Image (cartoon, rainbow, N blue to C red; front, side, top):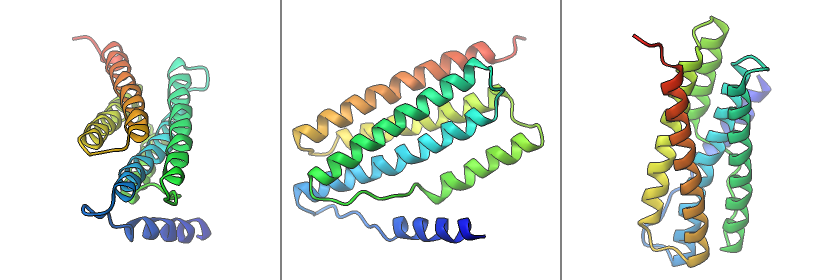
Length: 174
């Protein structure tokens, strides 16, 4: 399991990263940006995983892939900002998200993934992203970092709202 060992090293590298609350401003900005980057990577991979679980002609697949691409761009922006503030971007997501993506694939393999369950999973993920961005905006961030965080927060909120509408449209009527 070569992939498992590589994944294990990447997850360990992320686990070794410890944020410092009393760090200088640039270090605080890098810490906030790194946390957002980690979540954005998880979200990109999660949306791509969900896209593979629906038929290729489905508009839902297109929506999931579009959001994954938006998260990919968000990761690029976060990486550039981390470097601008003297940090080194992490190259992994979280172990928990990796396990969850595996669970989504297992459910799909046994036919337990419905469009509704995928939408619910994605909506929960975007809800977590919105909360993380709100928390980040409570921090004392340099103006360029704050601008980026606010733009990405708005995108996560818009995606969450769209997923809620799609979930409502997909939910069976009683």
